[in-house]
Image 1: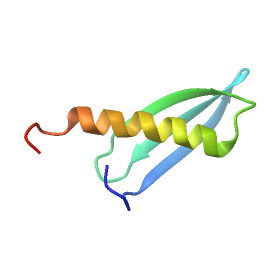
Image 2: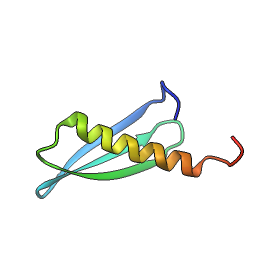
Image 3: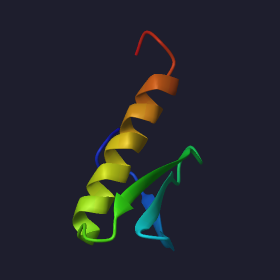
Image 4: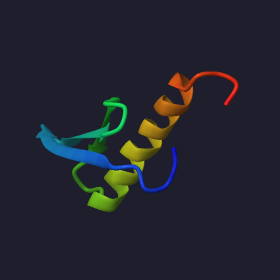
Length: 64
């Protein structure tokens, strides 16, 4: 995933955890990660962004 891509984050409390959605604006791909309430916002974003990057790489056409 190239630098400068726009990613939207959504945080929602789900019991003792936080549900973090990360959406790539260019592709519309969305992933969801669950993090403990004790995690910082930066840690939650890092987790969700790593998951989003893996998903985008997996769905990218082969040969690039």
